[in-house]
Amino acid sequence: MGKPSLKLNLAGIPMKNPVMTASGTFGYGIEFSSLIDLNRLGGIVVKGLSLTPAPGNPPPRTVETCGGMLNAIGLENIGLDAFIEKKWPFLEKVKAAVFLNIYGRQMDEYGRIAERVNDLEGIAGVEVNISCPNVKAGGLAFGTDPRMAAQVTRTVRENTTLPLIVKLSPNVTDIVSIAKSVQDAGADAVSLINTVTGMAVDVKTRRPKLANVIGGLSGPAIKPIALRMVWQVARAVHIPVIGIGGIMNTSDALEFLIAGATAIQIGTANFVDPKTSIRIVDGLSDYLAENNISDINEIIGSLKIT
Image (cartoon, rainbow, N blue to C red):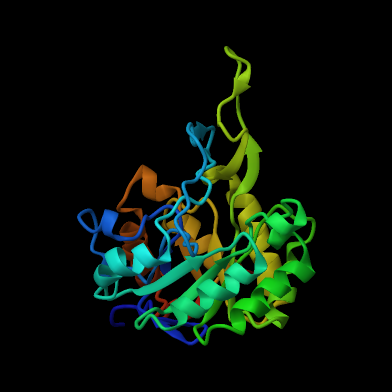
């Protein structure tokens, strides 16, 4: 048998392998370019972008926890105009699929930024962050209500012809209903999970360790939650699922693929070892060869329940 194939099709996007980097953990790609060969990745999802620059939350904004990390960055970013001028000229030359993660604080902002990025040549697709607080709904996150999640998806869908991925929040009672709602509203794929809401307290000062008090938990601690949700959603929708949450090595990645994910995203692990994503690409190839499997697609959704 020749070298196993890691190629796959993600919502119409041809990818050389299923390994992607998660938004917010890989900067704009440039930051990691001296550490790994970006061209070997299946995909890169850039830091979340808004129409205008956002300063984010005051520090401290990150806290290490047992088995993970809490962050309350507050979606700091340079804004779309600066991204197009300063970051995109580098990214458009990268031979990996590049996805723009976008967000808005109001419904119309999603449509406006989607319209703007639609004309940016070379983008593989957009990933929509619906975990943001809707300022017109008292801070309720767009992604916690099926109707609101669907409305965001429709708004973006109406303003772009690019492949549309919706990133789901785990901070809901029923993530399957959210996934179905965005699918029916025009999403081409879903990615899950975003961070789990948490907090940490400094017992010496009796103050929160994060200036924002609460933040998003990521890393190995959330992997079982993420894996369960990916499995549930993959069984319920007919669009591709991208698995995210505590993937630190090849074995973790394989669990998500076997559970039904078409692709996976590496997040917190990028901070621990910037070469994690490339190690997983090589590890997947080795796993297929060792098990006489010729194509990565053969293991996707291959979980045996009985």
